[in-house]
Length: 194
Image (cartoon, rainbow, N blue to C red; front, side):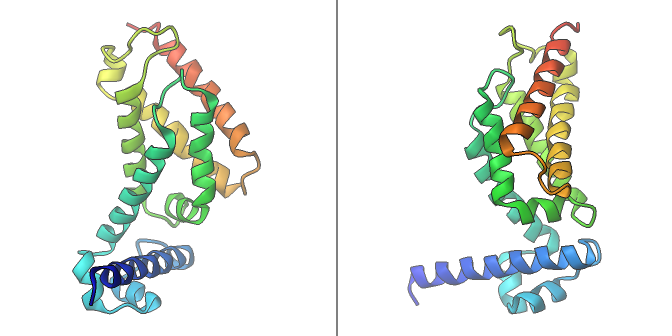
């Protein structure tokens, strides 16, 4: 067997497991699922599953890592001074992978996924942000202790969740504009704090 054939098999197996996981979460919720149910739905052997994942949490973590890599590439630098297109990119990415985000962030989804997404976005905010008047906010206590980055990350994760649960009533550009304006207002206010 060639390396390309092996890679193709692994990619196909991962795709089947991902689809099975998302379908089962929609039906039953993440907490109620077992690895046996996931591999049965995906028609993947137990050996193949455990060759690539430790458990269902590891499967979700790998899905998360893949999605965050794609998402962070789409975003580029993240902060209030970025053009609205950066925010639009976020919501366009979510719309493209709607089922994944709707399922994993929704009520039957994985609280772990939502927590990891908030943490990743908060870290991105922490690494790439200046307040609107170009003064660094990174040395401010509310930033250093993680309050402001976590608050902004939560704003976006909750906005994404709401947007998907409501059937995307706004275009990616509209929801990005609303969130961008809220984030800029929060940054502006935080720039006045000691």
